[in-house]
Picture 1 (tube, one colour):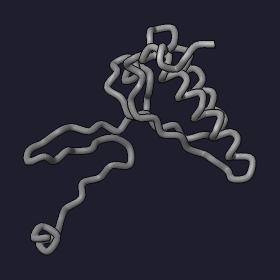
Picture 2 (cartoon, rainbow, N blue to C red):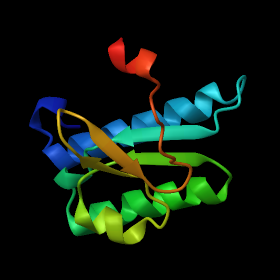
Picture 3 (cartoon, rainbow, N blue to C red):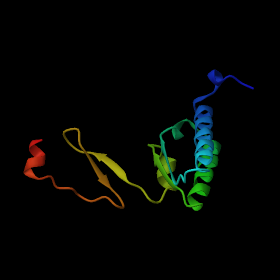
Length: 113
């Protein structure tokens, strides 16, 4: 047994992911949990650990779960077919592109608020 203080960044991410998946499974005994969103963390993994994590998440997706991943890791961009991309534009704004994204035009009233 090791202290969590001695875990590398990748090991900490794997532990966090494992706990999240375990808690999701426990919670789903009384409530159906069909989605899981992960924000970053993949950049700390070596190639083998990244592959293991992606295989695990792929299995959950095949079981009907919605898996959302927020990441800058290139290997994920290559492996995940359905993506929503966020591109910075001007004035601190961003543009979304991908399935389900459409352009929203603000009315003059909304622009003033």
